[in-house]
Image 1 (tube, rainbow, N blue to C red):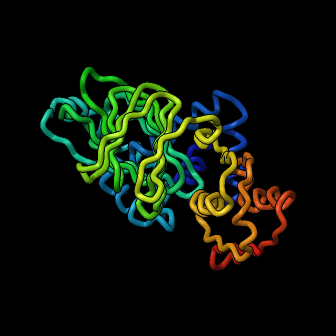
Image 2 (image 1 turned 90 degrees about the horizontal axis):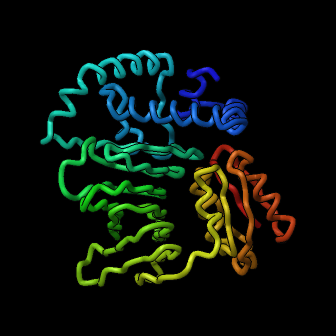
Image 3 (image 1 turned 180 degrees about the horizontal axis):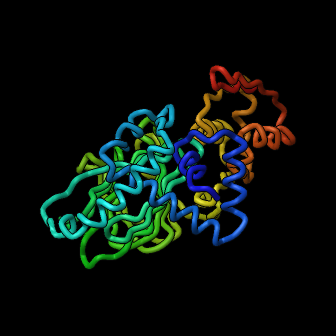
Length: 312
């Protein structure tokens, strides 16, 4: 696979045919997938380190991918890689600098990031992670706007904290999923391994601790704990969108988020349904709607100019 085409895809400039070509290639073998991840991580590293390409600008323009000249990026990538190689001893020896940077996952894509402490983070569509280049303090803090899956490396007693708009999640070493978009009311944290503590910005609200296979959900301002019975929900890292008895309205809100399109429901009867299903993101939203139509009675129309779908 040509690297220029991969960079075009990472920047959000690939057309549907090119996107399908890359997805099919990446999924065809484990070797291809490893190469895809390697190039994706390199893309993220260049965005973080290059003064000419600002990831903050990408995060601030969430409704459209940043326009990056791919040939220019290739030249910048080479120069940044060389610069990092020569400056690494100086950077790593500076114990007092803690510069913050951001990485954003464009609509319809997922991004894998490896932090300075070897913690691995997956970002879902339209999610932003803000983090320091080096963790210098006893508390390893990052900021999340969106959905992220964390595999936190234990570093002695250094706590790892994920800050969201309303809640903070504190851990030592564990695997967990966080859903917390700033422009959405929903908040959910699911624990797969280890233990986490969830605290509200309002310190008067008690801290909640989770055990493995438990999740916490914000409902009407309260945190409600429940058991995790289906782990397919976390397969979004593999490009799968999975629902298990999800309210139809909530399902459409997630489709709107993952496919970067406005969805209006004009059929109130649909609000009573809680469908179950699995959809591959690469198949597109219309494929998902056509599958749902087999069991639910509705029609829909799509306005490509306004990026809007109306369900009747």
